[in-house]
Length: 269
Image (cartoon, rainbow, N blue to C red):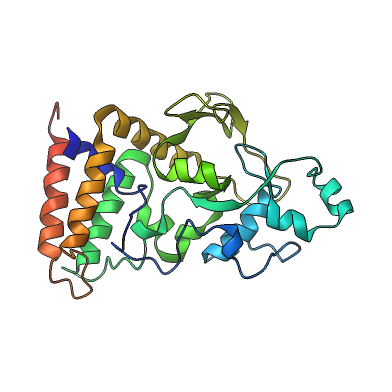
């Protein structure tokens, strides 16, 4: 049961090490940005983390989509008139992140065209799993820089981001109410509320398909205890360097993932 759930978690669970290693970490907090970017031109199709964070902040009115706290760095860059224009006066101020729904670490430098390469095997497995559960073409929609698309991310406070990445916070759709979700966590907190995503810009909102798959993975993980298994599996894979650049250990990765996928397909598994 744990193995069946674990492979499902791969597309969204943040790896704790370097397997595979992204060139740009999805959890980089706003205080690590080289400068505040209030007033910068908006990019509807960002190709890197910093640009995605900037555009998402503009889309999300410079606030966390769950708590409504304002991004402290951007707030500091605004005049009082600008703060009033965006309705930020009197809000709590926090550092915020651009939170990827599907971390770039699962879609970075995939090589679907290189037969037998370790990253080819990994990308095929991730793509299959995403497509099976969410009607999502992982390689077409989220490969490489595409992983930074705005539909794959939310502006969240640092604390909310940490819970989301740890599969301890998710969004459940409310039927008949577009872009409206109940925020669920593993324990009762002030974060458990109903939120509706909207924007005064033309920028795309978080994709309901991505959030639906993330929510499913969270529920499965904590019903089955699979989250701990994923941590152990990732640790084992990192120890054995299954994603070595030369593909030398691709067979091990293929065998592990295929075994898990076979268990997943078995009736009653």
